[in-house]
Length: 192
Image (cartoon, rainbow, N blue to C red; front, side):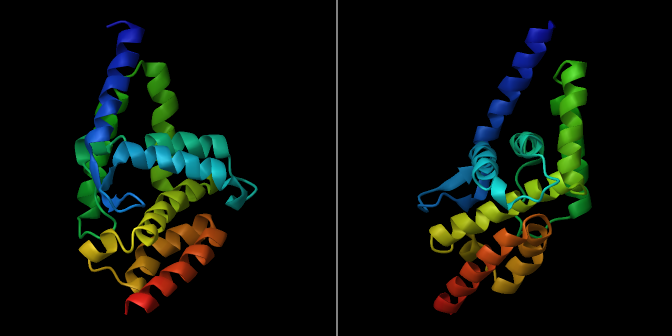
Protein backbone atom coordinates (compact mmCIF):
# COMPACT_ATOMS: atom_id res chain seq x y z
CA UNK A 1 0.00 0.00 0.00
CA UNK A 2 1.14 3.52 -0.69
CA UNK A 3 1.17 6.16 2.01
CA UNK A 4 -1.96 7.70 0.54
CA UNK A 5 -3.64 4.26 0.43
CA UNK A 6 -2.95 3.89 4.16
CA UNK A 7 -4.28 7.36 4.95
CA UNK A 8 -7.48 6.75 2.98
CA UNK A 9 -7.90 3.30 4.56
CA UNK A 10 -7.75 4.92 8.01
CA UNK A 11 -10.19 7.66 7.01
CA UNK A 12 -12.62 5.11 5.55
CA UNK A 13 -12.34 3.05 8.71
CA UNK A 14 -13.03 6.16 10.82
CA UNK A 15 -16.27 6.60 8.87
CA UNK A 16 -17.59 3.54 10.74
CA UNK A 17 -17.83 5.71 13.86
CA UNK A 18 -20.98 7.15 12.30
CA UNK A 19 -22.63 3.73 12.81
CA UNK A 20 -21.87 3.42 16.54
CA UNK A 21 -24.99 4.41 18.46
CA UNK A 22 -24.61 5.97 21.88
CA UNK A 23 -27.06 5.98 24.80
CA UNK A 24 -27.33 9.78 24.88
CA UNK A 25 -30.03 11.33 22.74
CA UNK A 26 -29.79 14.46 20.67
CA UNK A 27 -30.86 17.64 22.49
CA UNK A 28 -34.29 17.41 20.89
CA UNK A 29 -34.68 13.81 22.09
CA UNK A 30 -35.55 12.61 18.58
CA UNK A 31 -32.94 9.85 18.45
CA UNK A 32 -29.69 8.63 19.95
CA UNK A 33 -26.54 10.37 18.80
CA UNK A 34 -23.78 8.38 17.14
CA UNK A 35 -20.16 8.42 18.23
CA UNK A 36 -19.00 10.52 15.28
CA UNK A 37 -21.59 13.18 16.13
CA UNK A 38 -20.46 13.05 19.75
CA UNK A 39 -16.81 13.53 18.78
CA UNK A 40 -17.65 16.44 16.50
CA UNK A 41 -19.86 18.04 19.14
CA UNK A 42 -17.10 17.77 21.73
CA UNK A 43 -14.63 19.55 19.46
CA UNK A 44 -17.16 22.36 19.21
CA UNK A 45 -17.51 22.32 23.00
CA UNK A 46 -13.73 22.74 23.25
CA UNK A 47 -13.75 25.73 20.91
CA UNK A 48 -16.70 27.44 22.59
CA UNK A 49 -15.82 26.61 26.20
CA UNK A 50 -12.07 27.18 25.95
CA UNK A 51 -12.42 29.97 28.52
CA UNK A 52 -13.28 27.29 31.09
CA UNK A 53 -9.86 25.65 30.68
CA UNK A 54 -7.00 26.20 33.06
CA UNK A 55 -3.88 28.12 31.98
CA UNK A 56 -1.89 24.93 31.27
CA UNK A 57 -4.46 23.53 28.83
CA UNK A 58 -3.59 23.37 25.12
CA UNK A 59 -6.98 23.73 23.38
CA UNK A 60 -5.60 22.61 20.02
CA UNK A 61 -4.44 19.37 21.64
CA UNK A 62 -7.80 19.03 23.40
CA UNK A 63 -9.50 19.21 19.99
CA UNK A 64 -7.19 16.49 18.67
CA UNK A 65 -7.97 14.32 21.69
CA UNK A 66 -11.70 14.76 21.29
CA UNK A 67 -11.75 13.95 17.59
CA UNK A 68 -9.67 10.79 18.24
CA UNK A 69 -10.92 9.61 21.62
CA UNK A 70 -13.82 7.43 20.49
CA UNK A 71 -12.30 5.88 17.35
CA UNK A 72 -11.77 2.70 19.36
CA UNK A 73 -15.55 2.34 19.61
CA UNK A 74 -15.48 1.10 16.00
CA UNK A 75 -14.28 -2.22 17.45
CA UNK A 76 -15.14 -1.96 21.15
CA UNK A 77 -18.55 -0.28 20.89
CA UNK A 78 -19.87 2.44 23.16
CA UNK A 79 -20.07 1.69 26.87
CA UNK A 80 -22.59 4.02 28.47
CA UNK A 81 -21.25 5.65 31.62
CA UNK A 82 -24.19 4.38 33.69
CA UNK A 83 -24.03 0.81 32.39
CA UNK A 84 -22.38 -1.88 34.51
CA UNK A 85 -19.29 -2.99 32.61
CA UNK A 86 -15.99 -4.67 33.40
CA UNK A 87 -13.67 -1.66 33.17
CA UNK A 88 -10.54 -3.80 32.74
CA UNK A 89 -12.11 -5.77 29.90
CA UNK A 90 -13.27 -2.57 28.20
CA UNK A 91 -9.78 -1.06 28.52
CA UNK A 92 -8.25 -4.18 26.95
CA UNK A 93 -10.77 -4.11 24.08
CA UNK A 94 -10.10 -0.44 23.47
CA UNK A 95 -6.31 -0.90 23.52
CA UNK A 96 -6.61 -3.71 20.96
CA UNK A 97 -8.87 -1.49 18.85
CA UNK A 98 -6.33 1.34 19.07
CA UNK A 99 -3.59 -1.03 17.92
CA UNK A 100 -5.62 -2.05 14.88
CA UNK A 101 -7.09 1.32 13.92
CA UNK A 102 -4.01 3.49 14.40
CA UNK A 103 -2.04 0.65 12.79
CA UNK A 104 -3.80 1.42 9.50
CA UNK A 105 -1.90 4.71 9.29
CA UNK A 106 1.63 5.31 8.03
CA UNK A 107 4.01 4.89 10.97
CA UNK A 108 4.86 8.57 11.35
CA UNK A 109 1.20 9.58 11.61
CA UNK A 110 0.33 6.65 13.88
CA UNK A 111 3.17 7.53 16.24
CA UNK A 112 1.96 11.12 16.42
CA UNK A 113 -1.76 10.36 16.92
CA UNK A 114 -1.74 7.26 19.16
CA UNK A 115 -0.03 9.09 22.06
CA UNK A 116 -2.72 11.77 21.93
CA UNK A 117 -5.37 9.06 22.39
CA UNK A 118 -3.31 7.51 25.20
CA UNK A 119 -2.92 10.87 26.93
CA UNK A 120 -6.70 11.35 26.84
CA UNK A 121 -7.27 7.89 28.29
CA UNK A 122 -4.77 8.41 31.13
CA UNK A 123 -6.21 11.86 31.96
CA UNK A 124 -3.12 12.88 33.89
CA UNK A 125 -2.22 16.15 32.13
CA UNK A 126 -4.26 19.35 32.52
CA UNK A 127 -5.04 19.16 28.78
CA UNK A 128 -6.35 15.60 29.03
CA UNK A 129 -8.28 16.40 32.21
CA UNK A 130 -10.06 19.25 30.46
CA UNK A 131 -10.78 17.03 27.43
CA UNK A 132 -12.14 14.32 29.74
CA UNK A 133 -14.24 16.93 31.57
CA UNK A 134 -15.85 18.00 28.29
CA UNK A 135 -16.48 14.35 27.39
CA UNK A 136 -18.35 13.95 30.68
CA UNK A 137 -20.07 17.37 30.52
CA UNK A 138 -21.71 17.08 27.10
CA UNK A 139 -24.03 14.09 27.83
CA UNK A 140 -25.66 15.72 30.89
CA UNK A 141 -26.23 18.88 28.86
CA UNK A 142 -28.01 16.80 26.21
CA UNK A 143 -29.95 14.86 28.84
CA UNK A 144 -31.08 18.11 30.45
CA UNK A 145 -32.11 19.51 27.05
CA UNK A 146 -34.08 16.38 26.17
CA UNK A 147 -35.97 16.10 29.46
CA UNK A 148 -33.88 13.33 30.98
CA UNK A 149 -32.81 11.34 27.92
CA UNK A 150 -30.74 8.32 28.84
CA UNK A 151 -31.01 9.01 32.57
CA UNK A 152 -34.51 7.57 32.42
CA UNK A 153 -33.36 4.48 30.51
CA UNK A 154 -30.64 3.73 33.08
CA UNK A 155 -32.58 4.79 36.22
CA UNK A 156 -29.89 7.35 36.96
CA UNK A 157 -29.95 9.32 40.19
CA UNK A 158 -28.42 12.67 41.00
CA UNK A 159 -25.91 10.88 43.23
CA UNK A 160 -24.86 8.56 40.40
CA UNK A 161 -24.20 11.54 38.16
CA UNK A 162 -22.08 13.23 40.82
CA UNK A 163 -20.05 10.06 41.40
CA UNK A 164 -19.54 8.88 37.82
CA UNK A 165 -19.48 12.16 35.94
CA UNK A 166 -19.10 15.02 38.39
CA UNK A 167 -15.69 14.11 39.73
CA UNK A 168 -14.13 14.06 36.25
CA UNK A 169 -15.81 17.31 35.23
CA UNK A 170 -14.77 19.02 38.49
CA UNK A 171 -11.18 17.83 38.08
CA UNK A 172 -10.75 19.30 34.60
CA UNK A 173 -13.28 22.14 34.52
CA UNK A 174 -14.65 23.09 37.96
CA UNK A 175 -16.74 25.94 36.58
CA UNK A 176 -18.53 23.54 34.25
CA UNK A 177 -19.29 21.17 37.12
CA UNK A 178 -20.73 24.05 39.17
CA UNK A 179 -22.93 24.94 36.20
CA UNK A 180 -24.01 21.34 35.57
CA UNK A 181 -24.52 20.43 39.24
CA UNK A 182 -27.03 23.21 39.80
CA UNK A 183 -29.03 22.31 36.71
CA UNK A 184 -28.91 18.58 37.45
CA UNK A 185 -30.15 19.24 41.01
CA UNK A 186 -32.98 21.36 39.62
CA UNK A 187 -33.93 18.63 37.15
CA UNK A 188 -34.12 15.96 39.84
CA UNK A 189 -35.96 18.27 42.25
CA UNK A 190 -38.64 18.95 39.64
CA UNK A 191 -38.81 15.29 38.53
CA UNK A 192 -39.14 13.95 42.07
